[in-house]
Length: 171
Image (cartoon, rainbow, N blue to C red; front, side, top):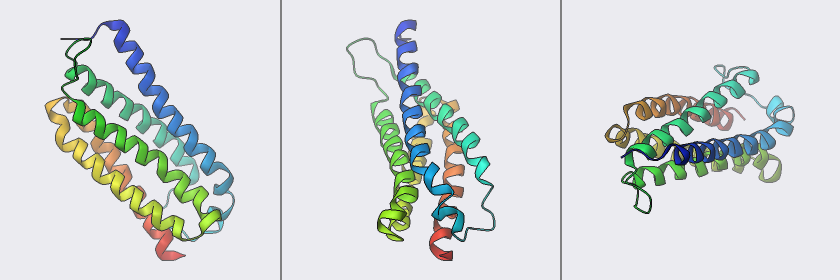
Protein backbone atom coordinates (compact mmCIF):
# COMPACT_ATOMS: atom_id res chain seq x y z
CA UNK A 1 0.00 0.00 0.00
CA UNK A 2 1.39 3.37 -1.01
CA UNK A 3 0.90 6.30 1.33
CA UNK A 4 -1.22 9.16 0.01
CA UNK A 5 0.81 11.71 -1.95
CA UNK A 6 0.12 14.43 0.62
CA UNK A 7 1.51 12.22 3.40
CA UNK A 8 4.58 11.39 1.30
CA UNK A 9 5.23 15.09 0.80
CA UNK A 10 4.90 15.80 4.53
CA UNK A 11 7.26 12.95 5.44
CA UNK A 12 9.79 14.02 2.80
CA UNK A 13 9.75 17.59 4.12
CA UNK A 14 10.15 16.37 7.72
CA UNK A 15 13.10 14.14 6.78
CA UNK A 16 14.79 16.91 4.81
CA UNK A 17 14.21 19.34 7.69
CA UNK A 18 15.71 16.82 10.14
CA UNK A 19 18.90 16.37 8.15
CA UNK A 20 19.07 20.12 7.46
CA UNK A 21 18.86 20.77 11.22
CA UNK A 22 21.73 18.34 11.82
CA UNK A 23 23.73 19.99 9.03
CA UNK A 24 23.07 23.46 10.44
CA UNK A 25 24.04 22.38 13.95
CA UNK A 26 27.22 20.84 12.59
CA UNK A 27 28.00 23.96 10.64
CA UNK A 28 27.56 26.15 13.72
CA UNK A 29 29.86 23.89 15.78
CA UNK A 30 32.45 23.79 13.01
CA UNK A 31 32.64 27.35 11.69
CA UNK A 32 34.46 29.03 14.55
CA UNK A 33 36.77 26.07 15.14
CA UNK A 34 37.95 25.26 11.61
CA UNK A 35 39.97 28.47 11.53
CA UNK A 36 40.89 28.06 15.21
CA UNK A 37 42.36 24.97 16.79
CA UNK A 38 41.65 22.74 13.78
CA UNK A 39 43.77 24.93 11.48
CA UNK A 40 46.69 24.51 13.89
CA UNK A 41 46.25 20.78 14.47
CA UNK A 42 48.40 18.18 12.76
CA UNK A 43 46.10 16.30 10.37
CA UNK A 44 46.33 13.11 8.38
CA UNK A 45 48.20 13.42 5.09
CA UNK A 46 45.05 12.10 3.36
CA UNK A 47 42.86 14.81 4.88
CA UNK A 48 41.06 16.63 2.06
CA UNK A 49 40.84 20.42 1.83
CA UNK A 50 38.21 21.90 4.14
CA UNK A 51 36.10 22.92 1.14
CA UNK A 52 35.39 19.26 0.32
CA UNK A 53 33.43 18.54 3.48
CA UNK A 54 30.45 20.83 2.86
CA UNK A 55 29.51 19.49 -0.58
CA UNK A 56 30.08 15.86 0.43
CA UNK A 57 27.95 16.18 3.56
CA UNK A 58 25.23 18.02 1.61
CA UNK A 59 24.95 15.10 -0.82
CA UNK A 60 25.11 12.55 1.99
CA UNK A 61 22.41 14.28 4.03
CA UNK A 62 20.10 14.45 1.03
CA UNK A 63 20.83 10.79 0.39
CA UNK A 64 20.18 9.60 3.92
CA UNK A 65 16.88 11.52 3.95
CA UNK A 66 15.97 9.78 0.68
CA UNK A 67 16.98 6.38 2.06
CA UNK A 68 14.73 6.87 5.07
CA UNK A 69 11.87 8.03 2.87
CA UNK A 70 12.16 4.97 0.63
CA UNK A 71 12.16 2.58 3.58
CA UNK A 72 9.32 4.41 5.31
CA UNK A 73 7.22 4.31 2.13
CA UNK A 74 7.87 0.60 1.59
CA UNK A 75 6.93 -0.24 5.18
CA UNK A 76 3.78 1.89 5.19
CA UNK A 77 0.64 -0.04 6.15
CA UNK A 78 -1.94 2.70 6.19
CA UNK A 79 -2.96 5.49 8.49
CA UNK A 80 -3.05 4.46 12.13
CA UNK A 81 -0.97 1.30 11.59
CA UNK A 82 2.62 0.79 12.67
CA UNK A 83 5.11 0.96 9.86
CA UNK A 84 6.55 -2.51 9.14
CA UNK A 85 10.02 -0.97 8.83
CA UNK A 86 9.86 0.56 12.31
CA UNK A 87 13.08 -1.08 13.60
CA UNK A 88 14.99 0.24 10.58
CA UNK A 89 13.43 3.67 10.96
CA UNK A 90 14.38 3.69 14.64
CA UNK A 91 17.96 2.80 13.67
CA UNK A 92 17.90 5.66 11.18
CA UNK A 93 16.90 8.06 13.96
CA UNK A 94 19.71 6.70 16.17
CA UNK A 95 22.26 7.30 13.40
CA UNK A 96 20.96 10.83 12.90
CA UNK A 97 21.31 11.59 16.63
CA UNK A 98 24.85 10.15 16.64
CA UNK A 99 25.66 12.14 13.51
CA UNK A 100 24.36 15.30 15.18
CA UNK A 101 26.48 14.59 18.28
CA UNK A 102 29.79 13.99 16.51
CA UNK A 103 30.51 17.47 15.12
CA UNK A 104 29.93 19.39 18.36
CA UNK A 105 31.87 16.77 20.31
CA UNK A 106 34.84 16.92 17.95
CA UNK A 107 35.01 20.59 16.98
CA UNK A 108 33.30 22.52 19.78
CA UNK A 109 34.33 20.06 22.49
CA UNK A 110 38.07 20.57 22.09
CA UNK A 111 38.16 24.20 23.31
CA UNK A 112 36.08 23.17 26.33
CA UNK A 113 37.57 19.85 27.47
CA UNK A 114 40.68 19.43 25.34
CA UNK A 115 41.84 16.16 23.80
CA UNK A 116 39.18 14.17 25.63
CA UNK A 117 36.73 15.65 23.10
CA UNK A 118 38.52 13.81 20.29
CA UNK A 119 38.18 10.50 22.14
CA UNK A 120 34.50 11.13 22.82
CA UNK A 121 34.03 12.01 19.15
CA UNK A 122 35.86 8.81 18.14
CA UNK A 123 33.49 6.73 20.28
CA UNK A 124 30.51 8.53 18.75
CA UNK A 125 31.66 8.05 15.16
CA UNK A 126 32.42 4.37 15.75
CA UNK A 127 28.92 3.88 17.19
CA UNK A 128 27.55 5.80 14.21
CA UNK A 129 29.45 3.62 11.76
CA UNK A 130 28.21 0.44 13.44
CA UNK A 131 24.63 1.73 13.34
CA UNK A 132 24.93 2.54 9.64
CA UNK A 133 26.39 -0.91 8.96
CA UNK A 134 23.32 -2.42 10.65
CA UNK A 135 21.10 -0.21 8.48
CA UNK A 136 22.93 -1.47 5.38
CA UNK A 137 22.49 -5.10 6.37
CA UNK A 138 18.79 -4.68 7.07
CA UNK A 139 17.90 -2.28 4.24
CA UNK A 140 17.59 -4.77 1.32
CA UNK A 141 14.28 -6.02 2.66
CA UNK A 142 12.92 -2.52 2.16
CA UNK A 143 14.97 -0.85 -0.56
CA UNK A 144 18.15 -1.70 -2.42
CA UNK A 145 18.48 1.98 -3.28
CA UNK A 146 18.42 2.84 0.42
CA UNK A 147 21.08 0.19 0.97
CA UNK A 148 23.30 1.69 -1.75
CA UNK A 149 22.92 5.16 -0.26
CA UNK A 150 23.83 3.88 3.17
CA UNK A 151 26.88 2.09 1.74
CA UNK A 152 28.15 5.41 0.35
CA UNK A 153 27.47 7.00 3.73
CA UNK A 154 29.33 4.21 5.55
CA UNK A 155 32.34 4.59 3.28
CA UNK A 156 32.50 8.31 4.04
CA UNK A 157 32.07 7.62 7.76
CA UNK A 158 34.91 5.09 7.66
CA UNK A 159 37.09 7.73 6.01
CA UNK A 160 35.99 10.36 8.56
CA UNK A 161 36.79 7.91 11.35
CA UNK A 162 40.37 7.67 10.11
CA UNK A 163 40.60 11.47 10.14
CA UNK A 164 39.31 11.60 13.73
CA UNK A 165 41.77 8.90 14.84
CA UNK A 166 44.62 10.64 13.02
CA UNK A 167 43.96 13.85 14.98
CA UNK A 168 44.28 11.81 18.18
CA UNK A 169 47.45 10.06 17.04
CA UNK A 170 49.20 13.09 15.60
CA UNK A 171 48.44 15.64 18.31
